[in-house]
Image 1 (tube, rainbow, N blue to C red):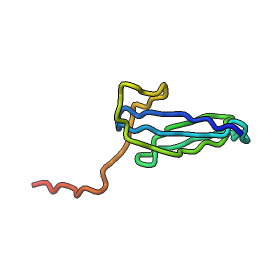
Image 2 (image 1 turned 60 degrees about the vertical axis):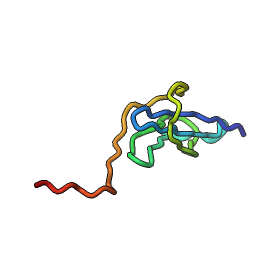
Image 3 (image 1 turned 180 degrees about the vertical axis):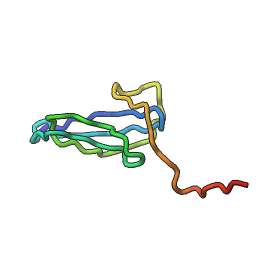
Length: 86
């Protein structure tokens, strides 16, 4: 059983996602992981072992980005009150 880790950086919302999977695991027809905040697809493969999003962090050093990069984010603020137009 060998685990492999993939880093995916989203340069729009400055988040880094840590994805792991067992290289000897049973292959799934389609594996897809989504961002827990905005729902965009972070990782997608066909005929691939099941993968898990094990960690996310704020991307603080943009000088050392991973090879896997995203350039979109669909996050919407639902906590702030809606401004009242005058």
